[in-house]
Length: 532
Image: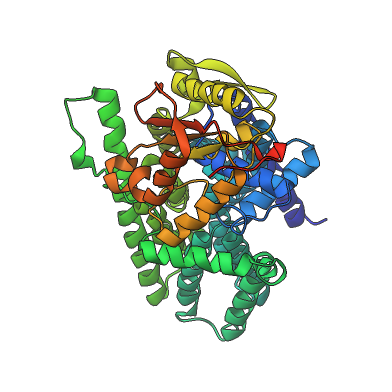
């Protein structure tokens, strides 16, 4: 092995070790803290149902299938489908994402090993700080993998590297079609940048064809599901049609611009944190537009630009859509990584190593300060009322509200749905089903948006067939929007529940509407007729 190959091998080992160090350390620190019946439960239910033989999207509401099959694969290897096995599966993917991010930064550094790895360590602190929420780590990791793929192509454009980038984009779409779109936009932008004043030896159209072929190869898992699994293709198309009918990819929120902070109302720490969050939203646009314009200007003038900087410039604006589609901290975290990597790439370009390390440490500290309000490990140790609760064989610490919800679900199940009887929990808590070891009695396990009458009638037929022992409706107006209150967004289902189940009074929270099966309805397991 020559010196260059040896150096690359050592660098790969160190970066993997550093990635594993951060991820394992984070997992040990806060892996058992908090429990989310909402989005994390959405992922947990889907992964468990694959083990049970179901297919995401066709058999139950789901994101694109990649993350579910990844987690289910880990379940199969570990022989465990519990919540900690789910978090471990996400952590394994997180190592890959962290490695991709640190590798991209490493190619921007030209220094002795010690200085380089100190800088990468500080960068890693910032990258880890923004890994919130934990059930969206797939998305954050994929964004860094796409940036790494772009940088790898730009370092030495070749047909093979075009093909590899295409595979990365195709696979990203398997985990989330939005990643496929973002990755494709970033790739086309990078390919366009390469085409400007390209040398005669450049791959040209051969490279573009290789990239397209790579996308097809990467997306083959979904193509195979469409071709081989009966009903999958039509269900897949239905999700696209529904998204187009909605006119957006998420439920929008007002953008928290810095000037919207109510200074003098919440205390200096909270106000400073939200001011910095607002600056991050501004920075996404400023960096995305500024960096992209600069790298193209340099290319047109025939000046050299570092490939890793071109990569983040091409990816920042597409991923900014992720943040602005639902402008909260969680979605900002999912869209910020190209810009965050770009920040450290710019710092790496400074001549003074003292300033590189000082500013890298400052960026890491600011990241930690912003996200401290949402990290479960911090909340579990600083907030009062957190309790230890057993969930599928693991002891988790969770806030009092979540612990009370878990206990309520278990009490209702013991009272009204013993011996494996179906339960119905609407619309926001899909995590109730794996928590209670039950299969959801309907397709839409996370009912956020209004649905057509035909869709609701089909769901009602599923509910009739399942004969749940009780129904819990969390009838809250999502984001304060009355149209998104379940009784308004799913009026037919709500009317059916009210007329075919008996209300249980009193309820622990005003927004909870709890119903039990009517006395004359018989459990289908007994073989007796169900009175409708």
